Amino acid sequence: MTPPLNVTLFATSACHLCEEAASLLKPLAGNGVQVHEVDIIDSQTLLERYQLRIPVLKRDDNGAELDWPFDMQQLIVWLGDVIGEEG
Image (cartoon, rainbow, N blue to C red; front, side, top):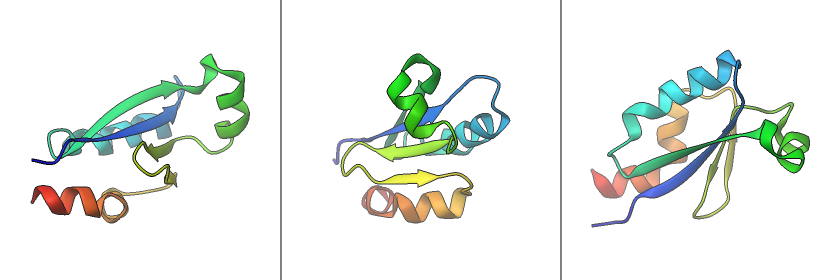
């Protein structure tokens, strides 16, 4: 059994796009993906890096990032090596 992939969602509160991205990620839980949400407002470094890009996903295994906008199909392609191993 392959260990789950940790993915970080860089977001902030009161961001409807961030909420939409989080909703897209929910079905992936239990399919080899664990999502950790980080509020960029808590870090000046993260705020400077992601302020104009959020929501942004980052894979912990290889550092790849996926900027908004993305849909479920793009998520599946981006995570294909992980989801493919689970299927």
